[in-house]
Amino acid sequence: MASKLITFLPFFFALFFLLSLCNAKYDLDTLKRLQGCHKGTGKVQGLHDLKLYLARFGYLNYRHTPNHVNAEDDEFDDELETALKSYQNFYHLNASGTLDGPTVSQMIMPRCGQPDKKGSHIHGTKLLNIVSHYSFFQGSPRWPAGKSRLTYAFGSNYPNPYVPPVVRAFNKWASASGYFTFSRVYDFNRADLKIRFLSRVHGDADFDDNDLAHAFPPTNGRFHYNAEKKWSAGPGAVSGAYDLETVAIHEIGHLLGLRHSQYESAIMYPSLPSGEVKGLNEDDIQGIKALYGLNK
Image 1 (cartoon, helix red, strand yellow):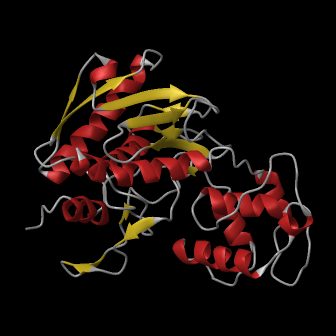
Image 2 (image 1 turned 30 degrees about the horizontal axis):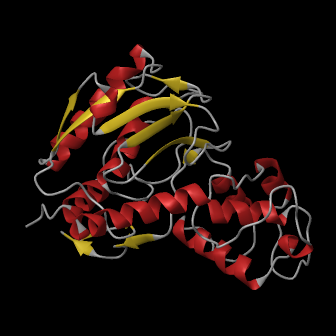
């Protein structure tokens, strides 16, 4: 019993971290207005929104009481500068500590709702002469040994035309890993992986304005699309819409235990513009093989 508890502790810590941030609401328009701010500008109304954003995605330890902002919440202090530089480094931006135009543009880009930080990073490791940027969740949670056959099911409100892109995404992970197999079942409650379309507040890491989807690490199995976004079933890019298959490949990576990659070409890169299609990259494949010991 104790060994089972230890196995699931990393997941519970990751879930607690996500849930603790679900009420951290920031305003994207305020982030645009704050462009140019840096340490030394003193108190600027709305800087707490920047702190909330950076806290939401794992760069800053910041909390505030809803509807009550203290004067120090709008102070550009050393801690905020350090967090902003960390964000800029992750996205290969100029780590100036100034909220410049490229940084704001990155922040307002639609993205996965999972945080970027608080993971066990393998950044910089060389495998097969490739510099790897993938990362794992805290504690490297994964599906138990021998649990390579996973079932998935769609929620009752999931649109039938949107099923094929997710099936294609599962097939790509199965082929690339050479380890996992995925099969659809119709008993939602008994499936290993549960896929739903949900709106903003739905009881876990609720969606913010630029969240496309989110999924939880092993062995929780939840994968939620943001129902308020415009989606395309493909195959292929559709202008002004987000590609269901691309987002599914990314979120399945989370379901298997991968966190975000700093490599823009990787499917596990956090953000995705509308009208763009991506697939698995060598960085993603090396990440899943490293996590499950498949390189041996």
